Image (cartoon, rainbow, N blue to C red; front, side):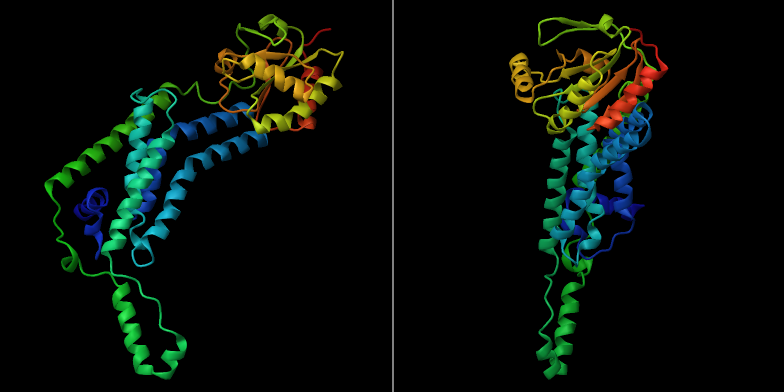
Length: 369
């Protein structure tokens, strides 16, 4: 345990002290687990909750997207360290992930605790941590013996003794120097203090994340099947009022979109077709605009004109998005005539899939007229 603590301390404060040693623990695997628990627990909880709300293959896709979002920063930093460290010092990649993990965990805990400005992304702290890990890797690379390419084959073939000497020199250069030949093993008290503070921060972050996930366990993921819409009221682009009473006795598709969303634009033809296919029946498509901008109305009006949208456009100020816990767009909610959620779709969805969902609700009711 003492050796493990010393190597972690050196990775955080004095990485050059690691040259000449070998890792004494599977630091990389442990770092990955700690990263998920301390910095990405909310992302994973959101993905798992979305599976229950969306269901089926679409729910699995959302879960995979959440998992990719959680793992990608770690994976990118892991790969970058391979190039920075070089072959001879690659064994230290695992332990050098710890500065990244510590920074990501501290940033996430600060966001959860409200110590960072609202809207700050955990990616900020992950970027800081990645730079910290890269600097540590560069210090090890500079301190380590230089790597030397092999001599040309032709020269080795003509002079066996020269080839043997060249191989011996190359192996010596690739072999890490003894720790006593590089730097003393002992670390200053300040480095140990930083290590203890880092350990305290990691434990605190894990506790904060776990407690917050537990407290909000019923708030993750979008509102799913079987839940009933509460009262709401938002204006429409036409200047009318769109409220809870409009949902009565009709199948309603609430399609959340924004003018800057490319996937939303790609999905618009399907929504237009659904609106046209079920015209004259008890089915309504409502586009819920998510451009939270002072010019929201003009942005939505121009977008509607450019894409020739004929269905109503609601101008959401965040009320509907919060009510239905919309975390990504495009997002479609299919409601029956009692305002009960029957289907939820996250991400782009095809016209046939939407038509099947509408037909299922029409066949099972309750819809009148």
